[in-house]
Length: 414
Image (cartoon, rainbow, N blue to C red; front, side):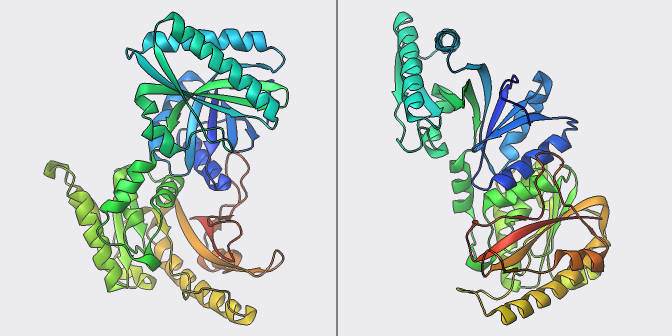
């Protein structure tokens, strides 16, 4: 961790599950062979020092992420007391921005974050004034988009609704103790793409579905190369498989429920129909109706990575008694060991298995889940216990923090 005196040039806003966001970021940096990372964390934000070449690589990976909210560059960093410098720097970058725009009407949004309400108001007034002054001199009409008072920033929905990615700019001002950092947003996750993809799914099964964003994050964290092969031995409606296909992977789905296999095939057929025939996407996927405990009967090739949300036990509206919950977890443990033993035989060396397991939370002191240490011992797989960057301790919970019935992500390696 750095003090805020260090010169940061990139910021990231994390999603609601900060650990998942940091784990996904860590994998991106690993994938691109970053050796050292200088960073600082504040609230929902991470600040980095990235060189110019690496910044480009980083930006190229962002549309493949599922858990990040926004990314931006920092053009000014100084003490909060030095407001003359802030005015000067703001004016300079606004002039440059308006000079580069060909439109006569430009939108701006301000995201001012501080623990002090007075500082928020004061800095907002300064930035607004500079925007209006520069616009007036250049005879350009500007609109400063109002934000909700409680958040002081646009949501991704509002960002795209206002068409800021094409017709404007979001200015971020983050006041951390006595330090002020000013920057532009360069990328925001597009929720409308996910909504469109979700609406286009022909088959949805409530008890066998996964969110598109989570599936995308898991595909990223798996570190499977674009030409690699992904296996989902409990494929449900095929959400993970589609996210793998979108990244150029060959995908194999297995499920013993005929209804799920039909759903997966329908959804993948529909997804691949949008590609030109010459791309031969249909040849990159296969779905099997089979019991995943006996994968040796159907899988004959090497797999680069495995991502799955397996059967998590009976559907429950409330927690069962502790003794009954313990029995459920022991039964699941046996199932998972069988599936992982068979899967491991086909996994390449150093390949990752992303495996979701259930957690019953009876109190802050008592939680029950399948024993990951026993699973590793019985399958001779290694449990990844910490991310390369940010020090994220694994496994991590991937559901809402206070859910009594939750899920936990294991990362296993051969």
